[in-house]
Image (cartoon, rainbow, N blue to C red; front, side):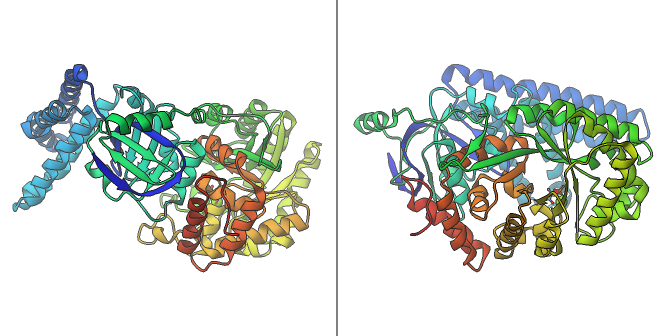
Length: 578
Ligand code: PEP
Ligand code: MG
């Protein structure tokens, strides 16, 4: 038996067997009952058979064509498949440790990698990428056994405790929380997200356990107390009985998969609206499942994927917009006009997906190519007969652009004899945020796009990994800009929402509500969790939290403060220091 003390961040006692999650590989390690060990061994064998067949097919296809020089590479991979240090070793690990096939394969691969690193011969060292390729193939074939993380947990007998090095909101959204009693996380600092996550899920959690995920054997009995931060490994006898009695309180929230619906309010009854961000018409089923009120951001430029601009005729666009509006009606749909840069528009070979450049982009581009914008506006205004439409312009930098765009909308409406629809501007660049009061007079609504606002304000290109860790949503400059926009909108009685990734983050939403926002649009899968956080939120507390956060000097200080406030309220609601 071993006792550890971490920081309790979500109250309650939980007991279960350890299921371990180690990232970045995101490979689970869980115990397999004795009678299923041979099934796991067989699964690895089956994955090898399938991989062998696939590699042989690739090889013979290559040998018959112009790629024949590459064929020997696949001979090498076929040989690796038979190497006892890989598949054989993985099977040995399953039998010896009674763990799942995926984890055993991961372990065998790590051992092999270490061997390769020690090799003197650079030619042999380079073969490591081939091993990675073979392992990737085996993993893919193994995964086809089940549909994903939710199914993997079904394999685990009895209640479990998730022991993770790190747990992200996106991963949490994929797990079946009816099977997990509680969780621990290794990281000790900047764990605000984890704490919010645990509270939203209603499961006990302890953070700050250093290397626990790296050393706890899968299947170990774990008792954790999310109030005191105590974790006991291998508890038995009277201690286990007591823990089990304390854990047996029915307090569990529903699993995230069952999204709540209907109007959402905070504890005091302040209405909060959660919409979905959508890229394609095919995303609509996930919108319906998520419990979103409507669509807060439809990224229309995705219509152009795989098409030239000439293909995206008024008719084609009209059909797409009409279909979305009809499927979502009577709920509201906000369609953003194409947010492209010139290289996309012209189909240039030099096209780049990076939107971090300050050239012709978004509304600016639309105004420079008025025919393109007019075609889109015609399609939108015609489609507006079929539902509740709002038109939104991206990458707005000032009032003159908005006036020109609105004039075009008015002209198109008149041409088609269609009544006006609400027209809004995205606040994605610092100029727009700083002039939000001026923009608010010109539009029917504002939407803060924090993805771009953060990168332009902090001068950090998110696609450049040398600086991407400087991309800080909690940077004081960002919090100030969000407050500025939210105040300007309120003063001019113009609705304002926020649709960047920040809105999808359950850890941020309290702060954003404290900054005055009550409308958000996000990835549909994030909605159930954010909904839970909002439903438990006291607006007064959120305001106090935001006020203090705004007085802090760095993103790290803000995050630490949010975490401390949460930890201080471990057995009560989230409150800032009094
Ligand atoms: C944003 O910039 O926050 C936004 C929602 O737009 P996109 O992510 O499409 O650039
Ligand atoms: Mg943007």
